[in-house]
Image (tube, rainbow, N blue to C red; front, side, top):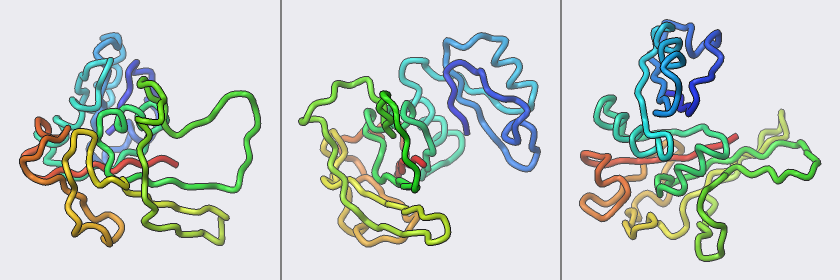
Length: 193
């Protein structure tokens, strides 16, 4: 799946040209109809989502229509920020590469509309750090330190030592951001490279 607010995407890429997999484009409601038609002409399904806050609608569609119970998000700062602000991230994967970037602009893996205050800082606990000797990269896996989502839903202890890719499930029936999205268990994993 791909989320785009404008619909201005490179339609010649494999995501749009391959017939070997199903792909869905979540397109912002403000995008021009011509953009939606161009994407649909590639054979990809277009699902319109609210331009201001697309994450809940995307996740509801993934759960209800696609049967998703676990989602890996490989996003840039804006998408990561939407997922974080919505309380949808249980785990966060980060790749550190041996490259230095200079300049005046601050680069961040999460860009959020909410104010940056100490009270809103989300603490993460390191689960694993795996170095890659060939590339010099380090693959980090973090889990929410509080084991609760922003609305107080405690995640079960049994997942503390799970393997890569294991689902983290919210306690059924608790007040969580997944309440209107899920039927049964739901897991959200955030990632950035």
